[in-house]
Image 1 (tube, rainbow, N blue to C red):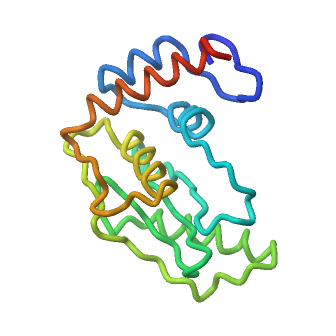
Image 2 (cartoon, rainbow, N blue to C red):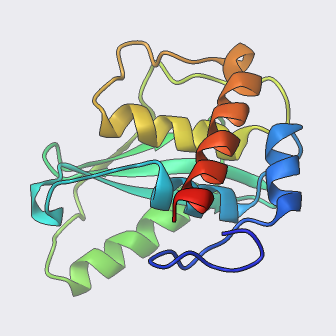
Length: 171
């Protein structure tokens, strides 16, 4: 994780990544990757999942979460800077539909939804953190009003950083 890799993890965080995470600078994809690998503990077999998460890098510097809702046969977009007019989100979904068709899953008639409530960010540097929090809440089925907001981001960043550091030293 720090300057190398942890056994079982393909991604790593540098000390600069931890500093950027703590001090609300842009969080790169490595934060999302490490979060999924170290924080989201999903103990069920993949066939038991109703939701599949696909973080999307959209536009030039923004992260949002696409959720494939298998049970409801829908695509859900959780975007902390909600803008339904983003052309790249439907394009991303269309690419995913083609992939799923190749795996014999017909998602042609699945709708694209933007669920409410969906916490919105205030600053420009928290989209990756919001994306991680959406995944956490959805994985834990803790979506009743999504129990976080922009005001919680400094605390969330500190908790993530602490978790990553503990994961490194406990490896």
